[in-house]
Length: 167
Image (cartoon, rainbow, N blue to C red; front, side, top):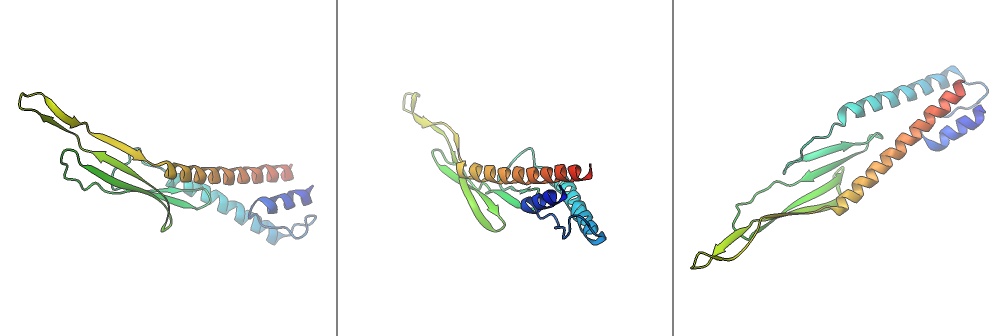
């Protein structure tokens, strides 16, 4: 049973290996303790650091941390418009993994206007609009989230295996 448990742990994670499953020595026990403590400290740190803002604003960069110490950054460019009727402003959105851009999108702002004819009637015009183009960013964020879920499932499996070994 111990041999199966040790083999399974090595297959699914960076859990420290055990040389002789029948006689685990003090050094191996200490290594397992250090590994367990580091996973606990990491989980505590991520829980404290991973608070996302309630509001996203133009010019923001938001760091999204994973349980495996990975990080992606959502960046929304600043707005620098001096609006005139009928003009469009494009604002870039990017998702970074370190310094590498892994996805991009944009926001299109259209400034509305209304023209009148000589009789005071409406001649032409358009209304203000905001259009979002972010599918690529959503796909990458979904992939990041799925990877984090997979990591949590692996660590949950490790907990189950350790609990079973201690019974």
